[in-house]
Image (cartoon, rainbow, N blue to C red; front, side):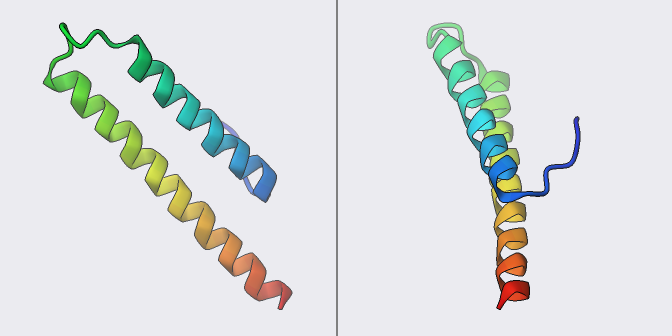
Amino acid sequence: MGNAVHDKDSQLSYLKNRLNMFLEVLDSMDPESTDVDDIDRLIQMLDDLEFKQNQFKKDWKEEAEEEA
């Protein structure tokens, strides 16, 4: 997909960009023509975003423990 994101600022930027991408997809959808596959795609996007957020949160916790 791209280069690994290791520092906190880059990780936050990544999450913001992915959230904006999700919002753009959501805004572009026509409620009258949205089908189950479209909803599944949105759910998958949210699941991916949640996975990354949890992964980054774990990194931040480990980093904080190392600094302590």
